[in-house]
Amino acid sequence: MKVLKDYVLIEEPVVEEKKSSGGIILGAEETDFSRPITGKVLQVGKDVKEIVAGDEVMYMPKQGIHMKQDNVIWRFLPEEKIIAVM
Image (cartoon, rainbow, N blue to C red; front, side, top):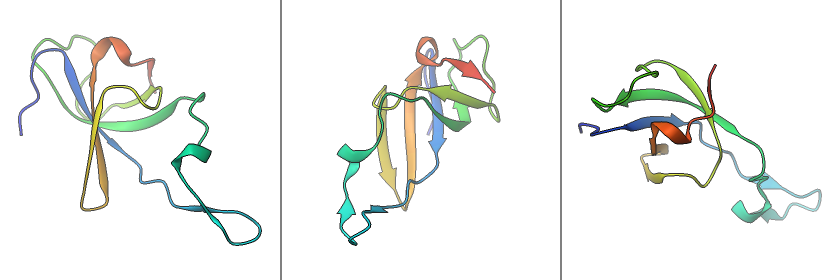
């Protein structure tokens, strides 16, 4: 896979299922989407200027395009959507 243009490929940590005190599994809608999350940059496109592979970055959930494969979540974000490099 090769990331193009100004996109950044991020590997997100897998969020484990949350359970209520009664043992009910809570879905993704129970996740706090108002707080930023962090992930590790795997690849950057040729037009990315300030971020390099290996950086840990902060961004808002539900941004960009994501896919899940083999218990790994990959997110493709344009560089402008990244809030900070940690």
